[in-house]
Length: 320
Image 1 (spheres, rainbow, N blue to C red):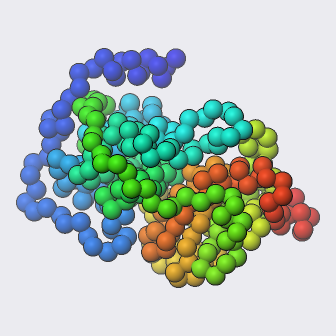
Image 2: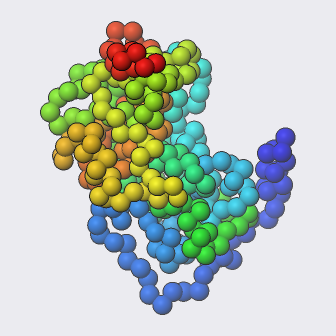
Image 3: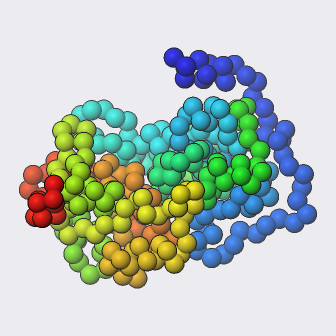
């Protein structure tokens, strides 16, 4: 009831134009760095200097209540579910599957994204993988070269002295050309046919307890099987960011992937429970220059296929 009343209160407020929050023109603009990490991750200093850019689209991801309380001026709220297939609770549609190209195009336009937009995505508090899920979707839609993630999210913005507001930004609808989808999505049959091949690293992005068979995930229709896809490596999404939700350094991330025996040049194919946490691991892989793909159905889909192999380390050691 509280959330509904807050939404109603916010919608009753006058929409405040972004120009009301504009900072004084900086003495010099900060250019977007050319190294691969900074092409994907932005600092708060860069955003502060570019927040008035006319083609900037700023998207906050996370708890909608947090967004209603405060957000970076001009930001719009973006839910991964608004750009994914709806939950139909049928046995044919899984959580967070990608939309068809035409519907995805309309959903992105509804967020104000156009062909000339520079999109900055950030997490409101600590839901890093919700934000990377939006970034991954935009990359899949062919817009990846114009999409970046704000490192540290809202908390980093506030700590750097950035202003926040509870006033809604003007709602605009973008205009996109027909999407040129990138081949970033694979299914269970592709994973089964390619796992173990040279140059392919199938990676389990869930917390280590699920990979090790100590914990069992709860599926949409029934509990998932215990363990991991046979032959998969483990790079938990929990290892990619520090306690302040900044992505770990290149050296630290390289060590994480090397520990999982992922070699330079490998294509990282990640899965998790339903496909969200995997995007965090895939984003870290992109920071290191790995080509990436996502198993859209993830372990929920694999687990439902009784003849698809699952390895349970805990069962072998008797530690469960």
